[in-house]
Amino acid sequence: MHISLTLETESPLAHHYKRVKSLKKRLFGIALALLYPPEVTCMDRGVLLKHFRPALLLLAVALFSASAWADGIDPRVIIQKGSGSTAITLKNPNPTFAATATTAQEGNTNCLTASDACVFVVFQNQTGQTLQHLTIAINDLSGFMFQCGDSSSFFSSCNSSDNGHVTDVSFSGGTGILPAVQSCVSPTAVSTLSCQTHFSGGEFGLLIDATASEGFDGQSVSGQTLTTPEPDAGIMILSAALGYGLLKLLRRGA
Image (tube, rainbow, N blue to C red; front, side, top):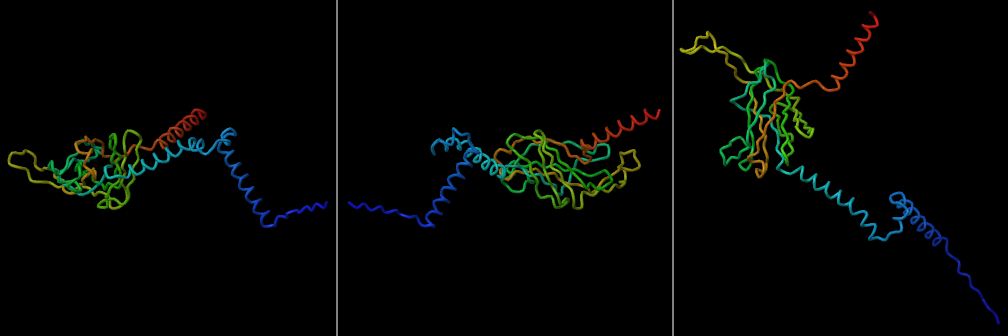
């Protein structure tokens, strides 16, 4: 009896393909081992999906939140022209404000569109100098995020920040807000003064406007107009450190 044995040889291309395929599996195993402990790498697809589900849920929430932040309900803070005003003076450089948001149907003619709800307050710069920087500090309202609006009539730059209690909307650049012109007006017949001070110009309107009136209408908006911001905390700490160091030098010299 003659037995013939035939050995099948593998082509170099097929051998290379198997090596590459094996390498891919090993790389995937290494990556999976880095992401999960050893006991997880043996799980089937359904179990892995169960583990990935919280991460996918967090991603979906983040994307939804980002789109919600960009909707039309978030009020815009705008600095524009206006007349009839609250005075900003050297003695009162940071006046407060408080008003209720209303719509055009309620007689408010200052909103950007007829369907908006807004707050409109006018100030007058009676400090005698141009306001190059202006910060509107608004007390936070639940469900609303105050953001920058078009204020190109006076400023070229705007940024907003929220510390969890107050949103600061800060304006700078541009021409700023020129000071009001002070003049003397002849007294009336019943006045005992020889001259009555009158200010003209230097006015600007603070408009806080929501493009969707639903929810913002009727909201009580309050805050402060800051023309002399408090010193930066870092500068205050540095000044205190320098003062302490100077005091120690003086004591050593004594």
